Image 1 (cartoon, rainbow, N blue to C red):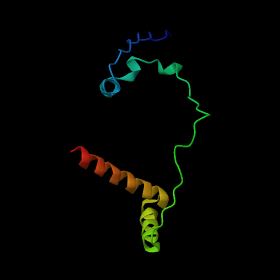
Image 2 (cartoon, rainbow, N blue to C red):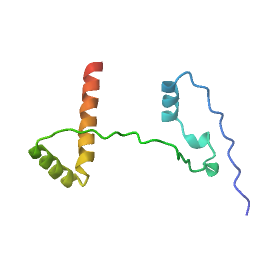
Image 3 (spheres, rainbow, N blue to C red):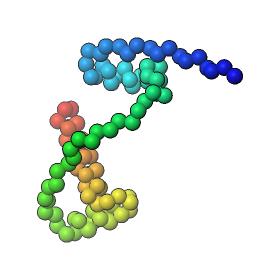
Image 4 (spheres, helix red, strand yellow):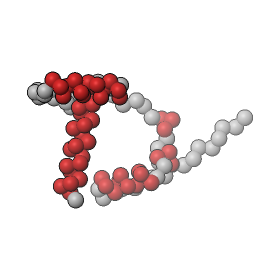
Length: 98
């Protein structure tokens, strides 16, 4: 049995900016540019946590409601709060931009 011939990889173009690079990778197959059989798992042992604890006073009824909603979605209520805040921040960003 013979081994299949390895496809020659295409050279990665030089990009003017991150937006151009993002557009390129959105429309091209990475397997034509990288030999994934040689990939290794990345390790970042010195990364710092990117979150910070904050204290927010909320009415008990609001916390109870958040916990009920989170339970229905099977997520921790604090994670649900982050999802809601992220959604609202995105809405406000779009409103300001538009």
